[in-house]
Length: 269
Image (cartoon, rainbow, N blue to C red; front, top):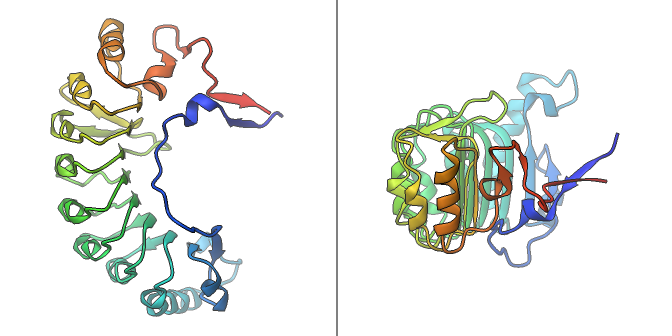
């Protein structure tokens, strides 16, 4: 079977903040001395990540060790956390004052207020925050350039993200694997995102079905969305937008149900 690799049009205009002198990511389950050798760590501590037979008691001990150690790791710039983060664990992470990138795979937190302490944060990725209702603390993250929130269906005020005028990349969506779309009432609250280069709503639906607010995002280059609309309306958005040039919304022919000629989305290797 041939392997699929990413085509050039799929990665065009994908935005990621520059993190100076970022080391290659290293993966950890337990907290050891080697964690001092890199500023880019992936902590993988879900039950399935441990050898068969690892007791619950031992896993809890490891969690406590991480919670004690993380605030001391001032050299860490990027943290990728595959763990069901509770409130205490989340608040501990937010003591890592030099974090520039934070990726949390799953969480039961109800209050993200402590995230305001991460004043150097440039990229934030939150997935499966099953109990979170309020994202207003994110407005305090003035250095943030890239924000992604997925499969967090209880959030009641996504529209507040439209106040983060400094964002360059935004992804809002539901669960790709379920599949289940995130339902947003309107795109209108996001029209003030004047610096936005990339918008990904591949797994989001717009209730009022008004897509013209996209034209207000003058710097937008990439749009990934599967919105169903009249072909004439889609062509109007594509032709009238001053800078839109890449992403699924542009690359896919929704009438023929295939990628447009010349688009290399996936390439067989």
